[in-house]
Amino acid sequence: MKTPHPLPAPNGASIVLRACGMAGVDVCFANPGTTEMPFVAAFDEEGVTVRAVLGLFEGVCTGAADGYGRMLGRPAATLLHLGPGLANGLANLHNARRARTPIVNLIGDHASWHLKYDAPLSSDIESLARPVSGWFRTVARAAELERDTLAAIDAANAAPGVVATLVVPVDYQQQVTPQAVPPRVPRAPLTFDAAAVARCHALLEGGAKTVLLLGAHALSARGQVAAGRIAAATDARLFSETFPARSERGGGLPDIDRLPYFPEAAIAALDGATVMLAGAIAPIAYFGYEGLPSELAPADALATLALPGEAADAALEALADLLDAPLHGAGVATSSYAIEDGPLTPVAVGRLLSNALPDDAIVSIEGGTCGYPFVTASACARRHTILTNTGGAIGQGLPVALGAAIACPERRTFALQSDGSAQYTIQTLWTMARERLPVVMLIASNRRYGILQTELSRIGLTRNGPQAERLTVLDDPGFDWPALARGYGVESRRVATVDELRAALAFAQKLHDRPFLIEMCLP
Image (tube, rainbow, N blue to C red; front, side):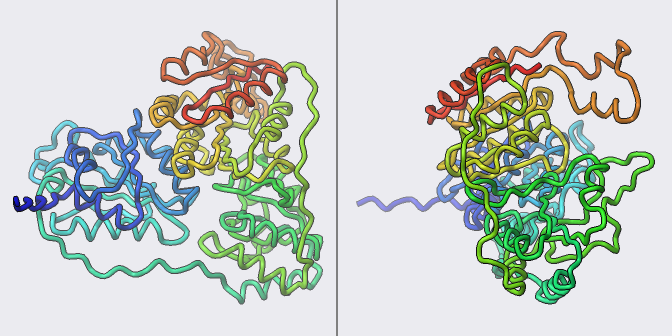
């Protein structure tokens, strides 16, 4: 009988990936380069359980990690190439930071002994990473690889969730070095401040006109049900943050509207009320406009029930119990809209998608053209999860849908996307096709940057000049969405009427091993 050969000792890249798998990081969205080749080889090594998913652009990888983390509440990893690779992914890391999504970035760097020569791809990685990272470290010694990896994961997981960036020189990835790892501290469960609940209870008992502004864990189903109880007992009005990272919707939950985007409407909605923050931060205007305050509610009108990193859902339940609120607030019954055939409009799109959602769907929304009408309509849809562009950097909708679909393969994922922003990370289609993900993409094709045209009008400027017109329209030439989809291996259909979209949605949901793109031609 032959004596089996012992497995070779793992090199640094294997140590990092094994530590990731041990700590629950089981997917890595990767766009590797020369300084990550040991990582590429290590994905196939014994004991490495991390699944590698290739993205053709770093912004796809970082956006996908955002969608994955929002759905599972734990980090995925990215694998990026030096400073320029990280820079290509920064916009969606900005969105992830604003969404408080846990992510672990693994950045390959030049060999430690090569850095002093300032090679062409050398850069100040830390300066690039710091603005989007709540935690940053460059591995200083190969013996500290496992310790540093686990520290990055623990930092990402700390409430309310951060982007953690770990830079790993390529020579340390290749070395075989014994590791010394200190004991880890278990992740603490979320709590809330009982004194804050008591203060909010006193305000409500005093009859103050109140708006409950919900974010983070308050927008779970549990949190919304409790908020509905409070509203039923006190007449408090309910709003969610304008762009929540994640919100449950439909299936009998209360119809909680989003705080209006434009400051005039938001100020009017909050006027004269005590604004009680449950998992949300103080509301401010998205942009500054002359003559309008940046703070949508004065500081002395704010009261904090729970911070974004606290158990806001449990705090809402505790408050409802103190108020002896009814056990069931006003929920919205599931129902379907009757929609007659005719040319597509944003309202029709929102209602058709609301009708079509299966139980437990996920909808990644980017763009206001159809996004706002859908959210309004979807209160009576089956239970689903909405993910929005919390940070405002466009190009996140398709990658977030990709990450959500990988995180939750048992759930159907939809991407409701505007045509201009979809072009920022159009390469996502290829990864969806390669991974055989049944994501349904609905592209609102109105061939313009609608928000820019609106903003020009709001500040009294004209877009009638030829150059201003060309900076806000996308019709010369128009995008050929079926051809683009086909080029990335994705089946598609172009629709222009209610009946055509209804049929396309029904067809798309019969596909279980590939994505499908629907171009919705709008006026």
